[in-house]
Amino acid sequence: MSLTMKVKRRLCALVVSISLSSAVLSQPALQPIPEIATDELSIFIETVIFDAQTRLDVAQASGATGSELAVAYGHLGDVLLVHGLMAPAQVAYENAQTLEPQRLDWPYLLSVIAIDQGNAPEALRHLGRALAIDPWDRASLIRRGRLYLANGETALAQKDFEKAVQLNPESAAALAGLGEAALQQQDFDKAVTQLEAALSRQPAATRLIQPLALAYRGLGMTDQARTLMGTMGDRDVAFVDPVMDRVREKSQSPQFYQESALQAAEMGDLINARALLVQALSLAPNDPLIVTNYGEVLAREGLLSEAKEAFVRLVELQPNEPDAWFYLAQTEELLGDLDGAQGAYTRMLSLSEDDFRANQGLAHVALAKGQYRRAADAFDGLRTTGQEEASRYLMAYWYAIALIGLEAYEDAMSVLDDLETQSSGADRDVIMAKARLMASVVEANSVALNERLAQVSALYNQAPDIESAATLAMIHAKLGQFLEAQDYQAQAMFEALREGFLDQRPDLKEEMDWYRQQQPATRPFGKGHAVFSHRTIR
Image (tube, rainbow, N blue to C red):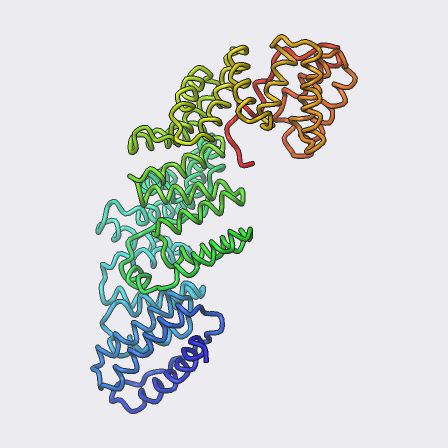
């Protein structure tokens, strides 16, 4: 018999023992725990539930006091809640509340379940009971204020949030609540003040951007509102929640979901990997490794804005960790936010002096900004300091590209000649960069041009794409074969159109105009060419 089957059978036995024991103890009437379906659970989760049920069974059998039995029921409820088993968790907490009616945890956790189930009236009833026990419990005030706000009971919401602010004037959640309450009352000045204050404390709380934009619009500040609309998200404001933190700590499953997600990602199933990591984060939202994996999977899916949110959170969790800033910087660069990327790479260097990754990133940012001298100097240094031959080779290539940006064409050609020798003529990018220089600004005779034409033709036949087609067009034009040049340039433009970024490549149209006028290219790469742009996911 497998371990899993043993655990399942034992769980069923415990359910029976719990209900039977409850009938004979001299305690208030308690409800039997509903049978727990374990078919969909991992062995890790089954084991932790089994341990919690065993603890309760022992407490019942040993004649525990009402308070001790309440703790055992509460522990079982915690384990069930943290693994998403809401119905049996609710019964466990109701039993704990029956046994220990003056403890705030039980009604508070019952409100969490009710909110999850969408039962706002029941959640309000439980929170009212929690606040009757402790009128100044911050988490209960925040949760009840949000429910009142959702119900349109603005005045009641405002009272709860005001009390929460009295307890902690820096509470972003309380300030956000006051801002949204003011927005409902059309007090736009107050709404802007409070929502801006909340966002300044928690910049990653992207859910607040929409109400802030509405408040700006209410004040007639349409430009500010329009700017914000492009950055909206659904990440809510976090608040201190010690009871739920205690519950989350009892989970044994985040690592299970994380490992399953990594396996799915390795198999290329990124959608399932993301879903598993969402589950892991719901159980361990502050685990840096899970946050990192989540951001990486989002980036691989091309969901860069969501990946950025994940890495912003990672930086919040590990503000002094260079790797956290590296992930954020890369994502900013991929999104085209060059200033944001530059700031993150610079922060990396302040934490890890001479970090090769940060210096490389700053060099690429300079190149994308058209700061060719700065980029060339940076890549020149990196091509001699890289620890691995492959990285030194790559930095030398980018050094050549920066030199082309500076119009130092002969120097660039010299670097590319060395790279072609190192790669035995097998590097596609080097071959085409040299071909473009020879077809535009570097002196080359017809024999050399035809040799280069044969090389690029072979690359085009292996894998026809925009760059090989446009490079062939450039060589044909240099040889005076303008009809062939127009044919290949048309193919390059068609590929760009098919891939959805023809509008981002004005250099292609410019070159076509030259060829129609029977004029060869006058530069190897247009300023709109991808080699001068920010890095993207290939």
